[in-house]
Structures are given as structure tokens and as C-alpha cells.
Length: 310
Image (cartoon, rainbow, N blue to C red; front, side, top):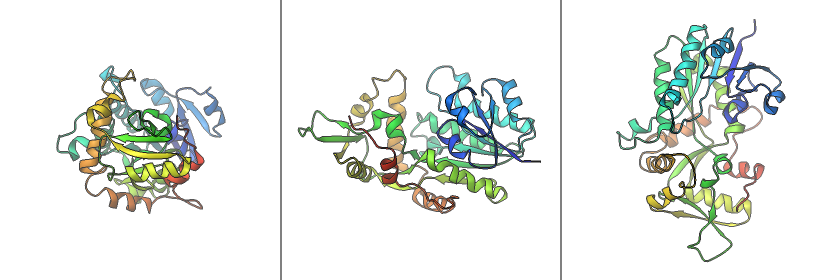
């Protein structure tokens, strides 16, 4: 009997990267979407807020790759932790043998309670700890900053700065030191390489977290690489936190300014994964199941996914 791997968010960035491993049951809310139709796998509809559909989707499944989208504002009953808990509890009730959960570092705990508004990190981290208490084998993949964010979150991409006279200069702006390094990952290309390492040797990685990133890049280095690939002058500018938060006022999502401001400050002071971030990233990159390829560098990502500076 085939061991079925159920992949949540199969038409998204992370899930789509995992779909090359095992016999896949791809779970998505819309099986009629163009992305779903292109998947050469068993596509099953499920809504993570609908218990009956979750149970049906996980019937007969051996392994689950679970990822959840961040929940900003609104009804707390739909927050990320509760959705993660529902997936994990259903997996246990349906006899699933193994769960691989896409997580993030516990920013509140690592910072000793200093940063409390990075909910997109803390909800996943809390779900990870909950899964560890369940009677199911588990492993975890903690993803670095997505290189794709420059495309999907254009407010973080370089922009023209009215305070800089040169019209041919773009500014990559954050509220922290230019020397601060962050782990970067091409999530669409490389998430599956880390998850694939776990799937290939599940017993070896049971209870383990892989810290998924290609490498560490300072903000100055990121600006220089964007400049090199685009052929435009891109510089880094450190903003006061209030000015940085003002960049988010055009977005209709309350609290997003505080979340991003604290997320970057947290990384600046404590390291994305804590004090051993660089060691954890290097160790995990060596475990990635790259096959004939390799993890994409930031420069390679930008060449394959050109950034249009406005």
C-alpha cells in the first residue's frame, strides 16, 4: 500500500515546493483553480475551518505536511494556532503516522517577553509545542524570510525616496542596522528540499527542527545584490521606527505596522532564530535534500524572478 503524503496549501508557495515528494494527496480550498488543475497528483478539497472536510482529506493518509497562513486581526477563533491545532488533532484522530509542520521561531520567548506583537511567529511556535505533546511522530521546518516577499509584499521592496536628490536611486528601508543579517530562502524553489530531507529519513529527524534558509544576508548585502541584478542604484536606509511604521498606513490591516517593526527589531537584537542563528542555518543548509541542484542564492533568485523597481 502506498504511503500517502497530504500537503496542505498545495497550490501555495510552501506546499507547491513539497509536491515533488512521495505519492501526494494535495489539499486545497479550490480544486477547480488553474493551479490545482495543473497538479499531477490526487487533489482533495478541504477547508481547515471545516472539521468534516479535514477528516475526509486525512483519511488513509500516512504523513502530513502542514502549513498555515498568518492571521492578522479579526476573529480570534480563526487564528493560526487554532487552525494548526485542528489539523494536528484531526491527523491524530485519523491515525496519521507523521506530521511535518512549517513553523517559525518563538520571538516572544527568545526576546524574554520584550517583543509581543510578532503573532505570525508566536502562533506557529505555540502550535509546534502543542504538536510535540501529541501521540504522533513529528518534525519541524522553520522557514527564514522568503525572497519572494519583495514581490508579494511590495511595501518592503526598494522605493524612490524624496529625501534623496538623485532620481536614479532606490532605497531599501528598514528600522534597524544595515549590518543585521537575516536568513533568506527561496520558498517556492527550496522549501521542498528541506521537507524532503525529513521525508527521506523520518526516524532520523523525528523531534528535530530544520532551519530552512540558503544563507545569511545583511541588509547592506541585500541592497547591493538588488542593485547588481537590476542595474539600478539601490542603497540601504535605516529609518526611525515611527517613520518605518508609517510605510504601512496605506494597508487596511490593523497592527501590521507594529508586527513588522517588532519583527525586524527582534531579528536585530536577538537573531532570527536566537543567538545561534548562523550556526543553525549553516547546519540545516547542509541537510537539505538538493539532489542534482542546490539551494538558490539571493542573486540567483532575483535573476530568475526579476524585480521591477517602481
